[in-house]
Image (cartoon, rainbow, N blue to C red; front, side, top):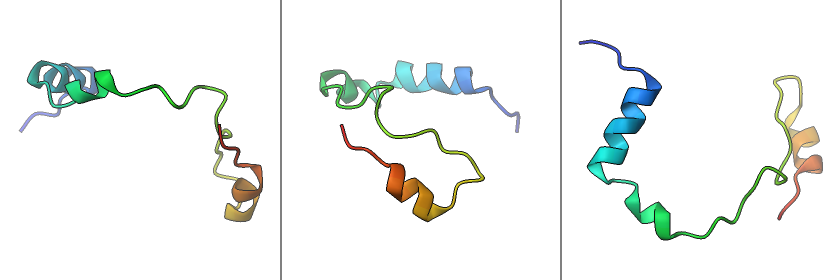
Length: 53
């Protein structure tokens, strides 16, 4: 079995229409939501920085 790339997998999902319903969903998140997560942050630090849009 061959590995396929992420872009090939995305093309397959798009062609199959499995995620077409998302087209009708509103965009409720953007790049200003949340925080950047790094491996050095403890869970309590992440929880104290989480913001809701």
